[in-house]
Length: 114
Ligand SMILES: [Cu+2]
Image 1 (cartoon, rainbow, N blue to C red):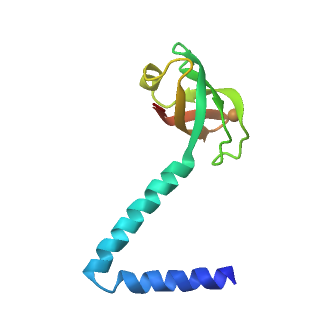
Image 2 (image 1 turned 135 degrees about the horizontal axis):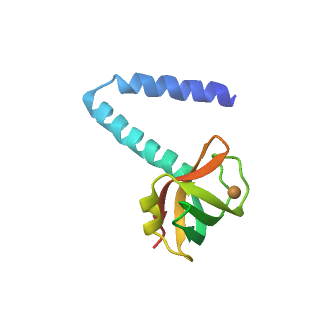
């Protein structure tokens, strides 16, 4: 039943996207909102426990990392860009995107929660 409904929704969405320029503009808004949502879904929350500039690592007490299937824990990550380590200090609450390159976990993006 769900599959049938989603197919119907998809068909309706495809039909609408060709309907008119007004609706096309509406679709653009929808796509923008969708990409924001996807981005938010990939962001994880954590607290900075240690910043190791020499090793290019940051230790984060993080919540569940849904994109990596990892439960909450405290662990060290490499950072994609060493400059990211200058944006944070121990005790900061952050939102970040965790990634995995081979066996190493890395922080791809981060922002301090104000
Ligand atoms: Cu972890």
